[in-house]
Image 1 (tube, rainbow, N blue to C red):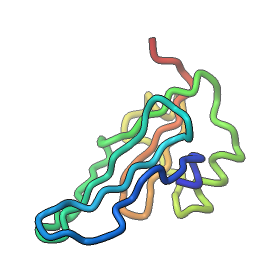
Image 2: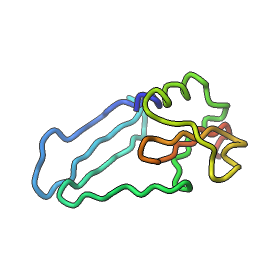
Image 3: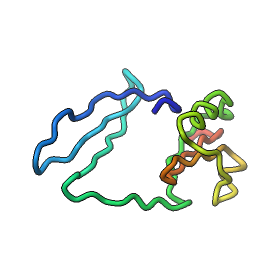
Image 4: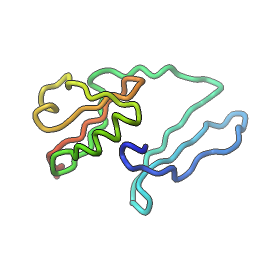
Amino acid sequence: MDGLGLAVLWRTTERLPGKHDLLMVGPRGAAWHFELTHDPERPLEPTPTVDDLFVVYLGKPADESQIDRLVAAGGTRVPAHNPYWDEHGVTIADPHGHRLVLCSRTWA
């Protein structure tokens, strides 16, 4: 979260039988956020692949200080499986293998 500048907006604070744990993160005051859930009674092992990507369209090249923050938070800069993303951005893998692409293009 620190690497992308996201804040914890909500987190379940008690364990309730039959209920999922919930973590909501995003920029404060934004019209969007991520909801991450976990079922401690039936946990799943994450199985990310090199083609499972979270892409952020920045509309400009990624700032090196942001990349440095992502690396300091435990990420690793990696070559993309699809060369398109190396041409138009930077790919960071987290310690579990999930990949984030900071894309210099816009989405419209």
